[in-house]
Length: 184
Image (cartoon, rainbow, N blue to C red; front, side, top):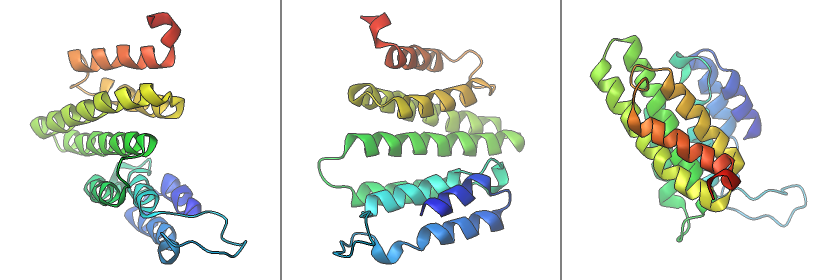
């Protein structure tokens, strides 16, 4: 699974991404199973499997090799497989990946000069990470704060992000998550 994620991070073509997804799928037969063998030292549940598939669909640095809608399908599967109550860290990661999928889709719309669709995607991404930052602050997950900060920076580079008040508010929330002692 990790090798597939690594290959997805470097995929430059859809074919390379497809090969990476196949690597992630290589663990499908052990998902949700426990083994008494000492060889299988990590138990992979369905939620983690779907989160990893979604992350792989979004990992490529090349826009053409990313599949945001497929990633959102995997994220829905992850929510469906998640235990009740939801694990906060994984739920926040799910929301962050969903926001990233909207950023990628919005960037694709920008390249095709579909500004209205791009703005809708960027708006949805902003809403997702604004909700996620609340959970992230609650669990004090600096890794997820950095992920949200990256999404915010990507949004800031778009026409949508130039003077968006919601994005500005999100930046304040990110700062309060990074430096909580400054906001007491």
